[in-house]
Image (cartoon, rainbow, N blue to C red; front, side, top):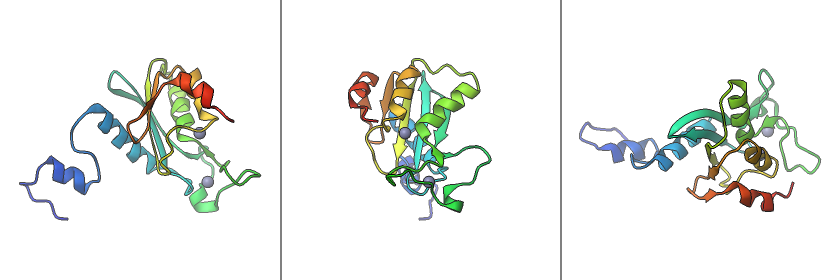
Length: 157
Ligand SMILES: [Zn+2]
Ligand SMILES: [Zn+2]
């Protein structure tokens, strides 16, 4: 599609597969999706960002440890059940680690995450970490918000 000057923001957003300028929630979910594109594991593309007062504090995607091989180059390392790739740190954990690394307060922040598998909430290992870090709200790509206290009841390991 070739964009002409007379096209409006909706056309541009459509061409970019982003949401037209509307509200903060769409804006942050689109950014989380862009972050997900950096994922290094082909099993899932997940991006997570931390936001407070409509400012982005940190970003994370599911990826290998620094300076370690990527799944997309060397293949995944699956757990015994074959369900989880152990080569990558999950996006939702990585964004918390990035904040810790740079001394950014996570208490009271909102986490927006975009998951290519369209999972409604982070996994059973990330959820307790999110809660412990004081994240007040988690919003998924369907714009659903789940409060952390709900997670305690849903954690299955
Ligand atoms: Zn992998
Ligand atoms: Zn996880």
